[in-house]
Length: 164
Length: 164
Picture 1 (cartoon, each protein chain N blue to C red):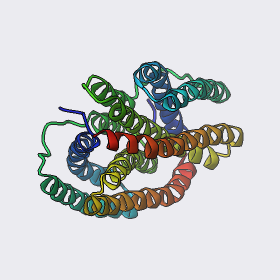
Picture 2 (cartoon, rainbow over the protein chains, first blue to last red):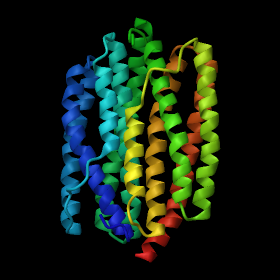
Picture 3 (cartoon, one colour):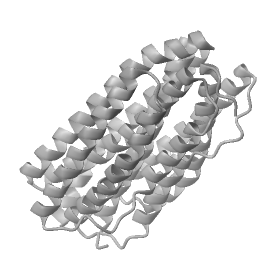
């Protein structure tokens, strides 16, 4: 991988995000199955559909940049999902598990917020305003998901606390 | 690991953060060495000192909770650092490398913001106000570091763009 320009760095980070999003697409159905609270299940289902849209946006961006999405496995997301799998194997109280699933999902969202924040900035600096707009849309959706998870955690954590 | 109460979940997440912070302590000196821009080197050095303080705060919290910090390896941070190592092995233009290092550090910060946000909320719900205050302090420092990195990225990325 050449890394001589900001565009090289942007494409490298976009590949990282492409790998991350596709790992999330595989992980979310397991999280939906494991969640107990209906509002959490619904939240994860909504985010699964959004994630499909994020991959489509990345596909469009790779086409616009005439670059391939291949060649990178995002190890950060791999580790975050591995931590989530360990949690899901625990023998946990259902409400405590829901609180844990929210925490796992917030690690996923924050990873993406960091990545999309970077590529949005790079694309702006490179004058690629169409690309920047697409990336900003996804960044806004990731932030909104994180905020909804925080709201949900206040409710579910309270329940988990009472169950203790 | 028992996971029957919110306190169990909180201790599990605190161990995850303890592992994460200690991995960061090992990774930061390599990033300081690799960075070129003096303001980035200084920023990383400052954050190294802060990170030592975060570990001390976690030690205090484990003492207060009469719990051990052992027993968990944070795979999320392991993956994020692995991604950073791959970047540092690239044959990159120095300013592009600086921009990449900022991106890597922002992934680290966001991981921690997610984790500290969770345990801060759990400790509040459990009525552990001393613990919550310590965790809020660290969370505020992680957020401030992330913001400084964003400001720095606007300057360094612009330079990296001109170097392209």
